[in-house]
Length: 187
Image (cartoon, rainbow, N blue to C red; front, side, top):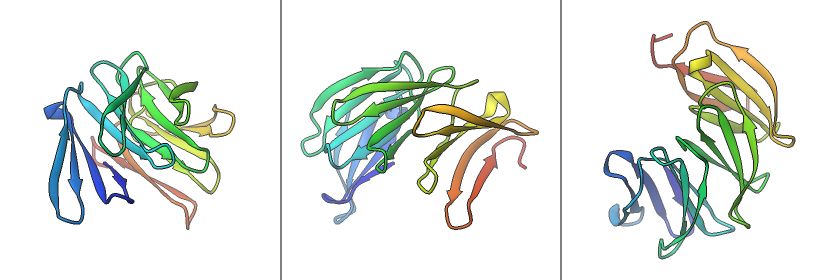
């Protein structure tokens, strides 16, 4: 999910329907459905460019939509399994997990992929620590969490996990902690 606070819109990736639902938060109603997508996995709204970014797993694309009328305004090809999206407002970029192991750094002003960060496996959840600029990436198939320096785009650490299934994660910035949840087996 993503939110446009100015317009009070919530964007919900509906991967089973190949669409994104646009919900008006003031009226609690569905105001539009963006169709014609290819298994949308992640959405991110970047307010300064007024663009909605939608990652599509089936074709590996990130589709861009104008933030008011939701008209298609472009597409970025990542080559496979585009997944989660995070808006890194501090760095002025969009980060997209994709493929067999990579993060794409997208410049919202030029609407282009400006850097790729290789990883050992497909990234599932990832979070950006705004205090340090680090990106923590769950790599369940590699039984690890990768740590990427946001400025250089280089992996700076690899934290092995005893078990796989590490999908969900959150950063507790106040306590400088990374919280990782395991799908299977429960841990």
